[in-house]
Length: 116
Image (cartoon, rainbow, N blue to C red):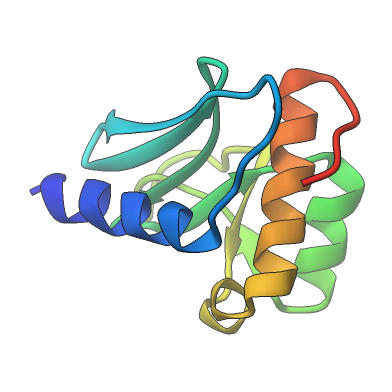
């Protein structure tokens, strides 16, 4: 069941043609979906619950307030995963905005400032 999510995530990331010096990006199976790792640290997931990014609190709040994102739960009755936000489909389809958010996520998990 997770294979389609892994394939979709891999294609989505490949389509952005990200190349970040010193950062190894890889996709792997993760629960019932797939996850994106930056230097071995998870920064995003794609699953039946949607596409979620690990982001700083201010960026998560901004996305939720603008209705471009929502609180993330792996399962409908599960706990809120506080460092993640589920992205809206229009935001994912906006390559420029999506690439910028992915860069923020990578920076966040690596604890560094990098241009993406």
